[in-house]
Length: 468
Image: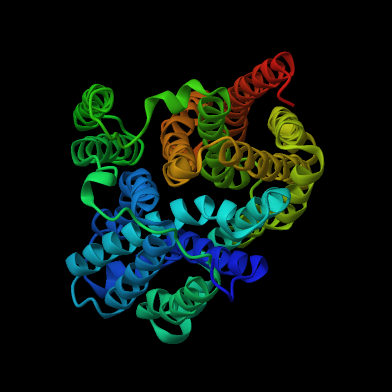
């Protein structure tokens, strides 16, 4: 361990890494109209500036975690931050849209490493008794980065031009490199010979990346319509997933140890994370249509109301982590899911009766519950995993969240459209929009209850085995 290592400063370095990777997810969205004008491109073309980043994270995040386990998490985290920083500079200098998309892909690869390894490095950086607080802080920084992106991007575009959306990451990335280099505990010694080192699973990595990319594209292409291309991509994802499982069961050093999923804390934690992320995305996708169509709010008011979620998540992250340290991850995780279920169940009814306040109050409860669940679930998973598998576990946690968000954007949007019965949601009648909202959050509540059942079942098994 570094002589200069300090848990507080080590956690600061991880928090900044999480902030940067989350900021990169949302900061470019607000700049799409400006980029379309700057490069004389269509919206379908410039949306790849956002999509390329998300696809890069989704396809690489598990592999990045595994690679960190093999070669050293601190070493790879430094490389990931460096890649993210250099790619950010290249984004700001890109003379064509194609080169900008390529640079954003590289930036996404760096972000995947940062996301996977910041979480995996918590156990190396802070005492076990403070792991919940650390996870809560990382959740706060993720929420702050996501919430700050659109407003910061808008200010930078208005004041300096679109390149500064990406250039702002360069000095922050340099600071992150310095903090990680100085304060994060050094990796242990590597095996002296190649025969002593576990080998990296190249076939499994390729199959998983192709499967995840196919699934993400199937869920995002078409902007609401699900055509033959989407079906073909979904079929390719299923075929790739089957081949991946076959390869992983046969190779000597698999990318993912399938036996990990026999541990209830891991398998249940990943599944619950995907379910609740699907619900969170529903609030982001459906919310603007409801606020505009049913409550007749203008764009500024919609933005203000929608900021409630990220603001509550940012404020609740650290207290949620402290609650995990005090009461244990299982109790806090269940409490978070109960709060989410309650908020989801009453949201459409309170909003119909009380308008904007009736929308904000249950949204705040739902988001606070999500913060509790995330801190508890992440802590539980990382506590139950072996030290040499923390990187891949961190990647899987983030992957489950990303897949939930991607699925939520597509599936919950479809549920909303079906519930409203309207061909065009923009011009739909207020009662139709309200009907779509009720159906959407009825499904959302069911998903949360399923996640809650998984957590309660796990809790009962632990009590029966005397592990709590």
